[in-house]
Length: 338
Image 1 (tube, one colour):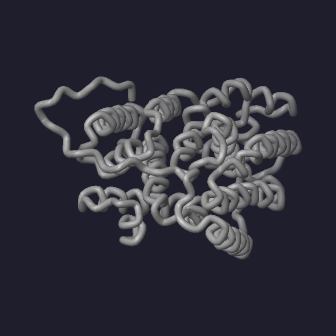
Image 2 (image 1 turned 60 degrees about the horizontal axis):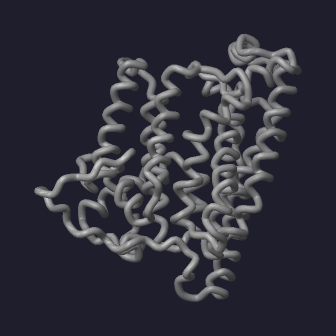
């Protein structure tokens, strides 16, 4: 986190500044596509986005951790500990975990509904026991917590030019579209973790199943039945992008270049998968660096134009509330649903 961003956001407490720095490190290391897009946001809003992403990344890393001693019972214990830190952090605005501390501060500043964090943790816990999905409806139910709520958390930070409730379905759809894209790109890696996110009924419609995916992964061979299923999953994902598209124009003008850039870059992953012959069981498709740079440059042009049209802070942009006074340790803490 640059000092300029933290200063612009009004984050002055040294402990909080260090916590937001940690979140930025997680975003930069693990979310290269989204981190690039985040650079197009006004400086004062970047710390909040890094906090939201950093927490999600941390929880996801717990679920996906591998190696000696990282069985489901240990992952479950680590998620339970994170849930407790989250509950305490959201209620008391304190804690020992930097990522939770930054998240709780962001949630307070932008009045983000705590239920979104609860739903996210529910989805993370399900990843420890659920390894496949019979139908797309089952996958969508999971993605409400794992992806849609991320879009809903982001919306107060980004700001809207319409009532927030009008933009929420599109923000949720965009979160789902991004995750579906990751599912398609990471079919092979997820299979190695014991998970299949391609719905079983979609696979069966093309004569494919989990065992065939495993066989293709192990032998390095393609199969026309699997390719047909992957193409249908791509088409399904593109339809969700179309559901999300109207929401771009509903965002605050100075937030649009960031989200539009993310929209285009994630969509480019689908293009890369198709260009690579849907070889996702064998390797990860990559968006060429030149393409990423070109999209980012276009975003910079759009951002400059938006700032010229909307000098100063727009009333529609998400605006944090002032910092809360120090908590009185003698005052009872109200109960909240996390």
